[in-house]
Image (tube, rainbow, N blue to C red; front, side, top):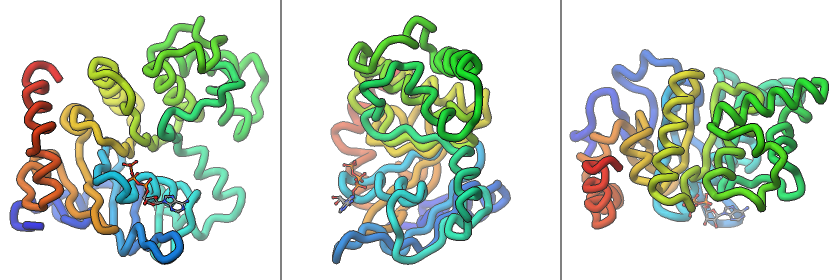
Amino acid sequence: MATDVLPPSAQPDGRANGADAEREVIISVRDLVVGFGDKLIMNGLDLDVYRGEILGFVGASGTGKSVLTRTILGLVPKRRGTIEVFGQNVDELDGPGRKAMERRWGVLFQQGALFSSLSVRQNVQVPMREHLKLSDELMDELALLKLELVGLKPEVADRFPSELSGGMIKRVALARALSLDPEIVFLDEPTSGLDPIGAQDFDELISTLQKTLGLTVFMVTHDLGSLYSACDRIAALGDGKVIAAGPIETMLKSDHPWLRSYFHGERARHMTGEAAAGR
Ligand SMILES: Nc1ncnc2c1ncn2[C@@H]1O[C@H](COP(=O)(O)OP(=O)(O)OP(=O)(O)O)[C@@H](O)[C@H]1O
């Protein structure tokens, strides 16, 4: 990794430095070690996520992007290290503290992960039922508002996931992630399975929501289009660590072999052609 190509504000291992040190860090991960059996997935990983940014998280398949997301969310145990979210060490939270934190983030898991036996309205209301005590009428109104926010018409509310297109499933899953007006949303490959137009529309929706709601977005993605068009910053995972972090220009200048082939390979050249043509 050629650190000399990084601007002063970019730190190869993902920690705040230079100009970025002035920004509010909303997620701070330090010296994280996560493993399954004798296989280490994270090995001393550091990462900062700033309030209000869209951070794209990339890395070869199987490097641990989903595992990192799930570890931050407290769904995978860590062996070592600290994770602070909103300035609070997640290990030091008691039950109510943990619940309060969960209300401040929303999650869109890979494949959308809607409950197939629940209608769209009921899916969007799942976090409300878990965290809030509201009347059914109010929850119905809120569900329609969330659907409108992600560009879906009210009549979609009574459909079931099997009656939706892939793009609509992603939008419903996003509406559910936004159900409790979170400050951060975690999106795990939100555009996978969408055609390029659908993916572009989704990226635009994320960018609009980030601007209008002041959201912070942590987005695991393989989609070069999303990295170019939606992300403010990118962090790349490799060998259990963040191998580079910074804006797209930093990634493009990196000498790291994986980053070179990812950002300058055949698919990337095709992509840059598409970007020049609108995506
Ligand atoms: N619960 C688990 N038990 C054992 N191994 C696991 C578990 N969860 C994930 N892994 C392993 O951890 C590694 C990282 O998986 P992860 O899903 O985070 O990769 P990823 O970078 O998100 O991949 P992709 O881009 O293909 O989605 C993989 O080798 C996976 O098999």
